[in-house]
Image 1 (spheres, rainbow, N blue to C red):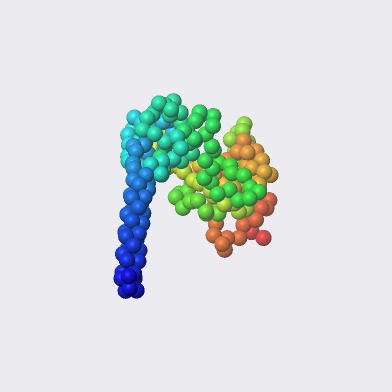
Image 2 (spheres, rainbow, N blue to C red):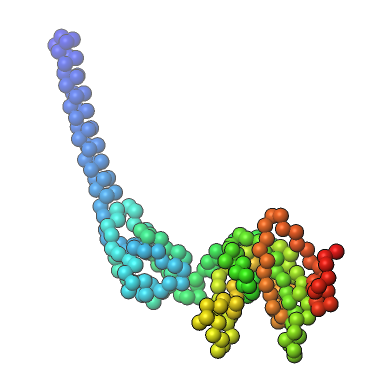
Length: 248
């Protein structure tokens, strides 16, 4: 056999081996793809589920649905059944398209506290009911800064004793309206909002919280909206004798 024929035979063998290898690889790739994309039905969230929300109630509201998920992407514990989750509550927020797994559900006493208020380090959050006179309350929003003023009242005569600035500048974390109209009042029917108070949540120190709670029992609180140029300080305040005196 001359050299040319020998080269042709070798080339043919190499080509045959190449075809065989390609065939074997393709068969393996098909098998791997089948494993990867083989799907199963599992329960997922259709709508957002809040911490503490009952699984049974959410199921009644249609917040879950069955969907096909690739076998390789099925989470441990996920299934198409509800038996394992009945009678439980969500322990954390579950978002749409999330697979339902037992690890995210449990008893009511296991629910994680969902703290959403951005409380500054070293501070605590307290809520106070402040008078909404002059409707400044419409402008009190989270992130605003206010001064808190206290008017102490003689509980026997209901006469004011003194009004002083209690907290010169604190940050509002949350705010919302709450009715405080006296029972039997017709102000609401007449369109008079003087009886409305606003519930304001503020960030304070422990000492400030104690001052606020004492002032609430001794009288009434009101709020003054501040900006960066507002000049406020705690002073002697105003009583009956100093009411009409000019500022120093």
